[in-house]
Image 1 (cartoon, one colour):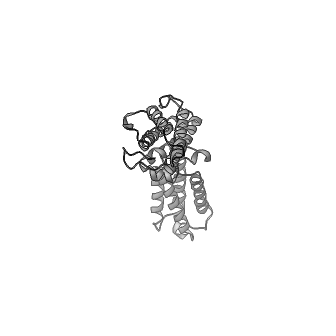
Image 2 (image 1 turned 45 degrees about the vertical axis):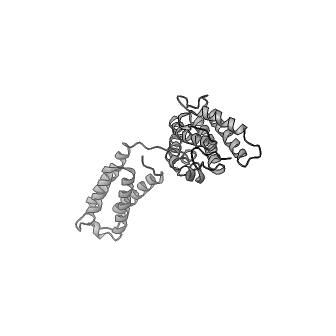
Image 3 (image 1 turned 120 degrees about the horizontal axis):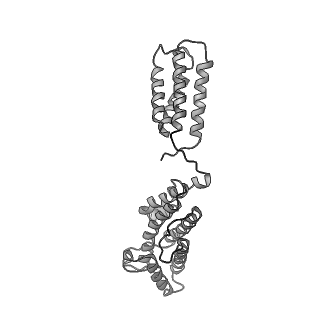
Length: 260
């Protein structure tokens, strides 16, 4: 899917209007080469060509390219140019009718293709999870709530396993989230209350429990479908957990090392 804003369409219409006005009301001449501001015509056609390419209007792009080629002909008449302009404008109009365009309100567009949706520290700590984090934002922006939660589930699977490793929990790769969470809580209860990392570990565990509640499933698996509001809630809780993990808890130096 291509990304562009509404001003692309506005500019196409504006440039078409300029070209039409130039050909209809420009200096009296028989040949396009005799129009003093031919260069302006060429520049505007080049912009339209580029816009058609960006939007994926392939037939319109060919029409614009052919129009540009004809400008090089010394005998290219104003009448022929007007005919080609009409053909180009009609082709753009018809081809736009065959393309499906999506409108994203600003409240949703902020999630689309956000490279650091969960912040710089999460991107640095978990570079291997960025593809799923970005896709979660894209799905939320496009209203695909259940797909958003699916990508967040993949993110949490790796994050929860790392959290378990930080606390020395064994075989986290083979355990489900609920089992890891149960063991995490047992370990944290046994930590010294004034331990350096105890507050951060407790906060991360509390955030993880909040993610569990957002999932609304006792064994930490997503339900069949989610609304956009529910997906937003899950994303918000996952982001909170991921930031606590990235900002306040050092990564385990090895799978078997306990950080206290």
